[in-house]
Amino acid sequence: MSNVSLFIFLVTVIVTGLASSECPVDRDIDLHDEARLHRDLTCPYNGDYRPVKDHKNTVVVKIRLALKYMTFDSTEEKITIHSWVALNWQDEFLKWNPSDYGNINEIQLESHEVWSPRLALFNADANSYPSDRIYTTCLLTNNGLMTCVPQLAHTGICRTSLSRWPYDEQNCTLYFGSWMHTGEQVNFTFYNSRPVVLDDFQNAPGWKLLKVVNERLPGKYTCCPNSTYPMLKYTFILRREAAGPAAIVVIPSIVLVLITLSSLLLDVKDNIRLMLVCFSLFGHFTFITEIGYIVPKLSSDTPIILLFVRDSMIVTLVGILETLLLMSLRKRVVPAPTWIVSVNRLVTSGPGKYVVFTEFDPCEGLEGKTITDEGTANTSEDRTRINMDWINFANFVNSCVFIISFVVYLILVCTYIPRDD
Image (cartoon, rainbow, N blue to C red; front, side, top):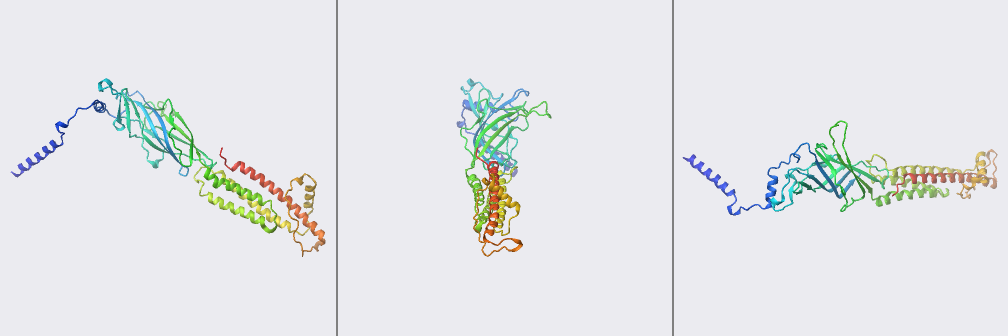
């Protein structure tokens, strides 16, 4: 008897629950025209298949890219574009007669309720977990024309070229298309007018977008002669905003050049010249260490500003060696070799005198120095003549080194110092 009572109790609970889940009769309302249209369109619809009545027909999907924001990471070699992507195609199963639904010509549908194209980025960054599905509200017209405008962010790989750093320009290319459908099934193409819109675009920090070039690739391959896999190619040309890096890198490079050249014009007396050129070499080492923290290190090519600093260090090192040589020549008290005397005469009597523009002070303390060995004279006039031979030769060497250094620096500046075109 207890089992029968338990059964009756369970049946009563279930029936009561079902009755309570139903809407009250007074709450039932008639569907308005838009609700009826939505119900009639989506009830028999299956979004897993292409919206064509004949499988041989092609779904033409037009795309317009409205760029909003862009970021570029030259260290990680990644570019991210934030945009509104307008997708437009014809759905043969979503048509109606407006007169049957209160003259409604358009209606909003969710993208997951209907078939929508799956737009894939082929050179996407795998770490960003890209998805080719769209989730947004779409606009449908009575002739079956569907338009969806999802807000998407695409992150792609962009190989950087930093040879002209910090005035470098980067060309980043993104390839879009269908991952599995052929061009005969889903044909991606551009809008006829304004395929790329930049009205509300904002530049990324440190970068300026110069131009966007769009191109449709037909996607014909020898492996698949009967099918095509078209792609939409977008090329973004970016230029670095180099006011800050230029002040940190380019201007100090020019200053180091001026210090090195200025030191070559000084007299070697009192070690001032040696101290200045050594300071220039120390500045090169410090400078190249500091810019090592700024210059991106993962580029396939070396920034030419580093090559400039490297070659400038070599010129400065030559200046140090030349300064030591001149200091030694000034203190020579032995007669100069015949070829040095001949060079001095040739320079002073010929056009070479116009090359010599540096003149060292001939007053060098020779007191206490006598030259009596090996047949050399020890008079004051002989010592002065001997000292002048070495000083004249030192003037000639220093002038030649300065001219060569100036020409080398001029070539280095024209070749390796990047400029803002």
